[in-house]
Figure 1 (cartoon, rainbow, N blue to C red):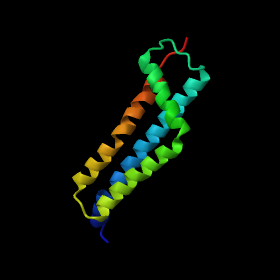
Figure 2: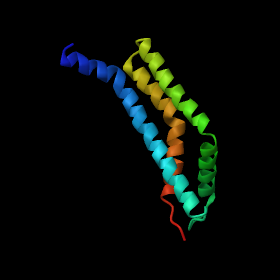
Figure 3: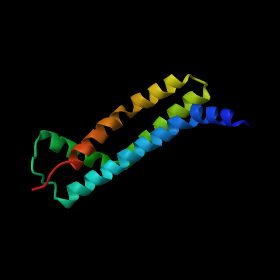
Figure 4: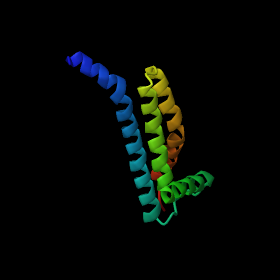
Length: 120
């Protein structure tokens, strides 16, 4: 194969999976930082408002049910792979991946909120 053809195949099939891997990796790292910060400071931050409590509850829920998160990540990859094998257009694959990642974007926001909290 020529280099242009190889680049086209990579752009068509691999880029969306690489972007999803990077997004899921950033979610995992932010969860690790948020859980570490919550445990290190005994869940007592300088400002304990309702959003802080909701975010901590969400992080606890996801941390205790990691199997659900793993199944969801596999579902996202399977949906994108299914659409790619059916030769759907690229914007359909990207739109599907984006829509399926919206709940994880809210989770990433919760983890970032807790990670940025100050202690006493």
